[in-house]
Length: 258
Length: 127
Image 1 (cartoon, rainbow over the protein chains, first blue to last red):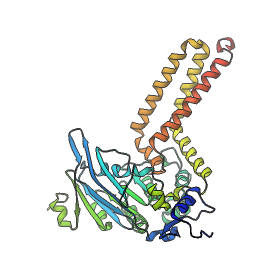
Image 2: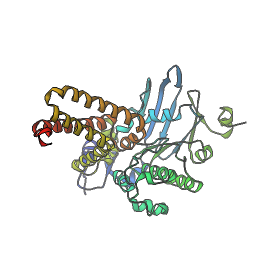
Image 3: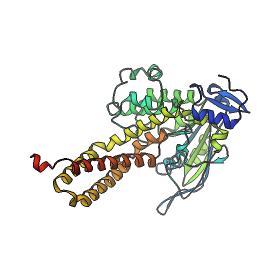
Image 4: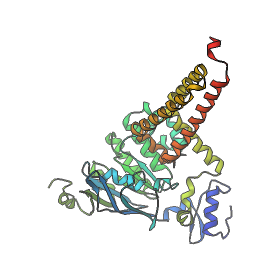
């Protein structure tokens, strides 16, 4: 399909209207590029000036976080220090007293309402219990065959209801649909919960593969795994987010023992 | 507008064709409605039966009853099934869209049943 020299606006309209085929185009320096080339496009999601209180307790006060496509950003912090709250603020489902969330420098509203921008894996399993795995993959427009190939244990689960899967299988399937889905940024809140060591390795491999085209923000108490995968690492403590560059800094910040 | 102009590939989740996009959202909204459809429809049927037996005089009471039960469903699902809402959020649907559409649909169903309850012959005579 020839696109000619269409302007950015025209291309955006072309994408929005669906165009003539499934092939999706982006704009780069005024020319159309296919999705395969999109990997080279770097997007930056940033948040700062976040203030959020639970009653009189200030949970988030001094925050600056950035998440870039092509990189994994790790977020560590003790229980109750506001990691999940920060992820919900970034995702857009929680409105704090004050916030500034920007995409490539431009302020955005609730990020989850921007099609294809962000996916969020909450702490607990999120798929409705009564729907079938088949339906989940159809809703996220993913190929179950590819999933089955990567995770052969799911070969007989295509028609299974989500509630009939084990906790680990549910977690794995949910993590997969978000990572393999179309969102440019994925926020993973404790993705290793309920997973056995083998599954943890598989999820880590999946994250490594998908990081090329996505920005991934991950938080988990299995901090060694988070550290091993992260390009940038932050520790959230007493409402303040601090960039960390070494294991020693984790000790200084009181996240690990001296 | 900025997003559409400068990062147009973000629209790539929108399938090729508005109808397909609309149908997918409709299916998701239906799937959400199913999470409380059974008790909601059963209550509407009960209300229609009451109206059929007692006539128009109980209409305000029945309407208030239906409204209160909808508020209960709203709080129950937002509280106990909050995490399942993330499934729909991850597919681009907001809480307003989910509740707005499903509550309007359920209310229309309720009005339809009440109208049927008034129009159909009284169950007293049938029994």
